[in-house]
Image (cartoon, rainbow, N blue to C red):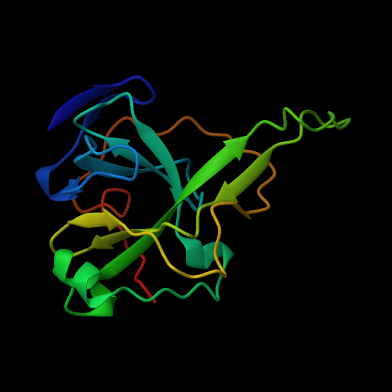
Length: 175
């Protein structure tokens, strides 16, 4: 599939790299088909690029990179909706928010930038079927704004996605 995106330009996305959200994301029910793209080489961040509305792209992170103790339990209904039979087949991502520190004073190094992860509503991807779903956890340990402590976000993003590359398919397993 070839798509033109405002953020990344033209992308060639192999069919096997497409992640399907049957119910969309929270607040974005129209978001049905996406792919994962690297933020920049070596970065723990990825872009979730919507393919059916190319204006939408969300920054994501594998939560265990930043929060090794992050532990979620899917309900039987959630696992069934994703056709998950084994936890090893689940990739977990969280949406990342970058705020420019509008309410804080500027430091001598530039504006204060806050980078947070939404641990309360992770995205679960069945790595076998490529079906995904955002789940809302009923767990008071997690909120929508856990600091990642990242100093800034550089990088432009990719021009193409190769079939079978780890940029096109999640390689992080649910825990």
